[in-house]
Image (cartoon, rainbow, N blue to C red):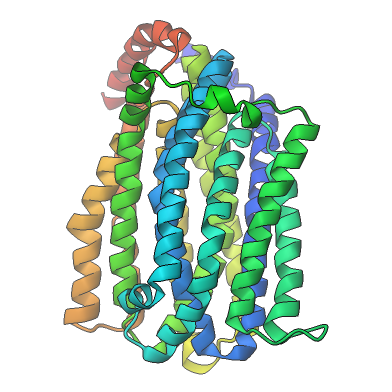
Length: 477
C-alpha cells in the first residue's frame, strides 16, 4: 500500500499540467474561435428568418458527414505522427503525411462534387420541408467549393499539432474567422454597393475564409522553418509494407467514422422531419454544441500528443499514467463549461433568432445535452487516447455496436413510429453513453490499448503489459 501511495504522489502534476496546457489551450482556443464565428454567422443569418437558419444548419450536417468521411484518415495519420515524433523518425512522418493527404483530398473532391452537382438530392435526404430545401440548395452549390480547402487545412493542422506546433493553426484560424465575419457582413446584406446575396453570401464568405486558412498555414510554416509540409517528394515514397501498416491501423478509425457518420445522418433525417421550430432549434443547438466540442478538441489533441509521443518513445508507464488523468481533467473542465452555457443560454438563443416554441425547444435541448456532454466527452477522450497509443479497434467496435443496436432503433421508433415529444426523441441520442463509459474505463485499466508502432515502444511492451495485468488483477480482487 505504501509503495502504491508513493507512486501516485510521485506523479509530476506540475509538468503534466504545463505540457497539457501548452497543447490543449491553443487548440481549444482555435476551435472555440471557429465556433464563436459560427455563432456570429447564425446571428447574421437570423434576420433572414428561422427557415434560413434551419436550412444552413442542415447543410452543416452534410458538412459533418464530410468530416466523418475524411477524419478516419486524419485520426490514423495522427497516430503515426505522434509516435514517430516521439521516436524522432522524420522519414516516417513524411510518408504518413503523404498517405493521409492523398486519402483526405480524394474524399474532399467527392464531397465537393456532390454538393455542387446534386444539392437538391442532399437536401431532400435531410428534410421534407420544401422551403428549407430551396434555401439549402443555394447555400450548398457555393459552399461545396470550400470543402477541399477546409479538409486540406484540417490535415495540415493535424500534422502541426502532432509535432507540437499548435500556434500556427491557431493564428491561421484567427485570420480565417476574421475574414469570414467581415465578408459575411459585406456579402449577406450587400455593403459597399455590392448586391445582397443572403445565404449565398454566407457560403461565399466561408469559401474565401477557407482559402485564407490554408495560405496562412503555409506561409507561417515556411517562415518558422517547419519542414514536413514541404517535403513533396518524400511524401509519396511509400513502401508496400508501410502502406499496408497505415491502412491496417487506420481501418478501424475509418470504419468508425464512416458508420458513425451514416448513423448520425439517419438520426438527423429523423430530426429533420419534425416541426420547423424544432429544426431551427437543432440548428442553433449544433452551433452551441460546438463550444463544448471545440473545448474538448484541446484535450483530444493533448491526449494524442502526450500519450502517443510517450508510446513511440517507449515510455509506456508514463503514457498510461497520463491517460488516466486526462479523462478526469476533461470531465471537470467540460462540466464547468456546460454550467456556463446553461447560465447564459436564453440570451444566446434569443440572439440567434429563436423565440416562442423554438426557444423552449432550444432550452430543452441544451439542458439534456449538458447532462450527457460530460460523459460523452470522456468517452471521446478515452477513444482518442487509445487511438494515439495504437488501439483503434476497441472504441470503434463499442461505438458502432451501440449506435446501430440501440441508438438508431430508439430514435427511429420514438420519432417516426411513436411520434413522441421532440425532447424525448433527442434524449434517445445519448442513452448509450453511461454504458460505454464503464466499458471504456475497464479497458483503460487493463493497459491493452497500448500498441506501439515504433521499435522503442515494441521493445518496452512485454514488461508493461505484465505489470499492468498484475495491477489490474489486484484491483479486481
